[in-house]
Image (cartoon, rainbow, N blue to C red; front, side, top):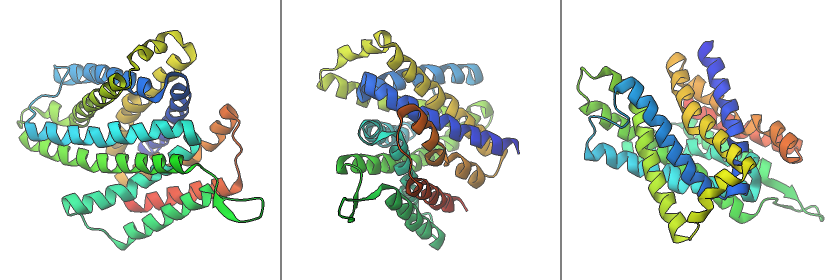
Amino acid sequence: MTGELLSLSVAFMWTFTAIFAEIASKHLGPLTLNVWRMLLSIFFLGIVLCYFCGAPWPQFTSPSVWGWFLLSGFMGFVFGDACLFHSYIIIGSRFAQLFMTLASPFAAFTAWLLMGEQMTWISLLGMIVTLTGIGISIMGRSEKGHRNLKLPLRGILLGIGAGMGQGVGLVLSKQGMQTYSQIIPAEASDVVQMIPFAGTQIRAMMGLIGFGIALIMTRQVKTLSRAWTDVKGGAAALGTILLGPFLGVACSLIAVNMTHAGVAQTLMSLTPVFILWPAHLIFGTKITRQEVLGAIIAVLGASLFFL
């Protein structure tokens, strides 16, 4: 039961991570927020690795390990999070999190393509159910009663990109962890247990490089100081960092070890449902029964991938 409760806690953490990220993105800008997020994530993860492994960086690595995690960092952080944080501004965190349910079908397809994992009929059903749920949520009616999209096309494409980046990045990270575990000496058991944290730190390094280059190319380096002058934006950024890539990731790994992985992942996937009420209270967004139904169906579809 402890693992299940911890999984629900992670879903709540990621709910408020999304809300904080929407606030911080609107105040600081997505690029500025992501540079700070990657930088502080590397720092906090370094503290964890130093405490458990004796060094603030990944040990016993190889070029192939770095290659897989850097590629994962590019897809998950640079591409995926860039899409996600820009979608927060255009369609808001509640719809952006809804599109994150697409991470499961994208991960399943990538694992089939890259690692030869089997695509079952349940996975195909999960894809259909997830897409159906998203479709129900984002469809509206015009004044003439015709069905149409109630979200901007750019926001929808960014949401799809966010889900794709998350799903593909997850599979690449899994490949990196498998490669990493094969080269660590047997006596270094403490390092083996911290592989997910070491891998996340390498991914964050790729994120910092990618977002840093984008910040320089767009001549927005001076915006980094906004985190100190904009109190609301800076506080929201700190909440995004602590609840997301630091506490959220750590608790999710613990939860997976304490209960069945499928149960943990399903409970942690409830963020699109949990976020509806807080988004209404904080941003004043209107919630319809159609959106609630669509979010529930999308989450159910994503959960089918873990049966």
